Amino acid sequence: MGRGALLYQINDPDALDMSGALPRWPMYLVTASGEQFSVGLAGIVGASQALSPDGRWFAQRRDEQWWIRDLTGTTERAVPPGYELRQWSTDGQSLLLGQPSGADEAYSAITLPGGEVRLLALRGTPGRRTLAFLDGRELVTAEVKVGLNARPRRQLTIAIQDVNGGSARSVSLATTHQVGPGDIRNAFAPLVRGGGDPPTAWALVTPQEELPSGKPARKPTVPPMTLVGVDLRSGRSAGRIDLVVLRGGRAETFLGLAGTEVILQDLAVGAGELVAVNPVTGQRRVLTSLPHRTRVILPGD
Image 1: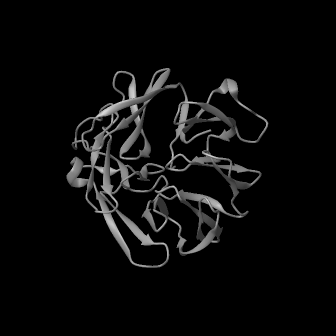
Image 2 (image 1 turned 180 degrees about the vertical axis):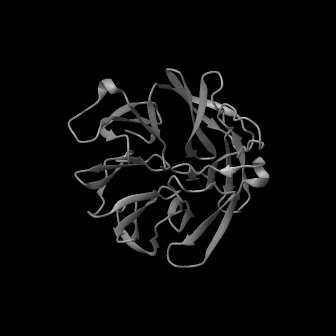
Image 3 (image 1 turned 45 degrees about the vertical axis):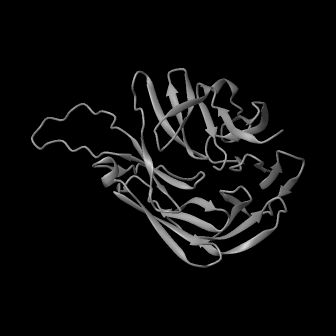
């Protein structure tokens, strides 16, 4: 097939397959050369397909087990039963695997192309989200509270740990000085992502608007949204990106990272576009147009 550029799914009610308990729609792989291939059905919740950051490896869950295929050749590796995929390494040469056990889970890594599985010294703990697997050597996590009662925060401390139990470090993603009064958006599921090259972490930030006391309540408006990033190696700011929010029938949503760029989906009435943003200059470029109700999965997710 050739290296993959992205996966996409159109959540079209007319193409709904009702053979299972949950709705499932066709998923398609787009290669770097622009070809498209059907890769089976997938639900709108959870993930059963994934691409490595370099687009070489395609992972797919079949019959309660994960399989990893080399899109540049014919090799296919089976992930041993009982493992779940957790995170691609940023160099695309390994995958973080999890084995849930009670309140936490054991972590292992499968190396590509050989397929060797090795147990890691680190274990996953509740309440921490995996953001990146740096070159298969360091695991990047953050404490992200979810739920209706979770409070927004002005700063997010990101832990970076050696997978073999070596030294650990941390970086902070602070919002207060970068976007003015604002908090990391902490709705039901906070939007915090990591990856890219060089590896960065980004969070969606929105200002907290307070009405003056004694004033009548105003009609609610959509607050501005800003992406704030941090370089995971140096701890320095990776930039900020102001999103378009409901302007002229358009709205931008954060999808993830690809190389040095941040990827947005520009939603419009009846259609949309996939947009790459340079976080240093803020310059946008349109990658492709998208049909209505398209869900995109980027390499490395």
